[in-house]
Image (cartoon, rainbow, N blue to C red; front, side, top):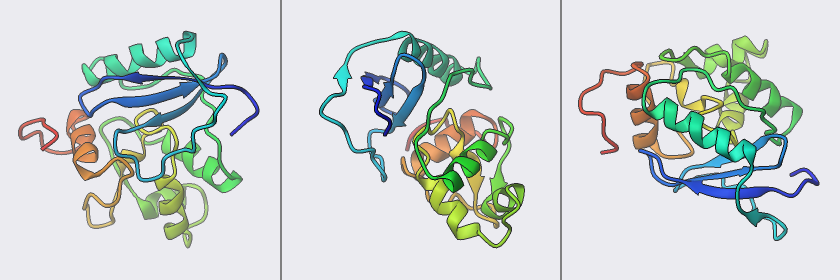
Length: 170
């Protein structure tokens, strides 16, 4: 993480309680209740509120209500240069669409790096806002997701990228 002190809060959502962390300038972390790659909490982080967290909560609520397709938030995901490249490319996947891991690897001009792209995708510290849920297997299967496949399915159904069925976490 950066040297800045993060403020964190929890936010209720249809996919469970989200952990949000931001400094006064930008959003650093969104985590699902069960997160495969949880960011290590630092002792100087403080629970509270700030303008970035308020804006994040509002935009997440709009997204889950079907009223927001693009997030307009200042972001500061922490990762390697390669991870940053993958996370930037993720933001180019349109709402309601999916790409395969191979599509994502080609998008960053590294077509042989499908596994590395998958690993970077799985380490995305800002899911939903940086839509890693929109990446699926080449055969259309819902593969790996840090928050669990039921959440991935829910988000893709919410966006219309999968048949609705009953929109639920089950």
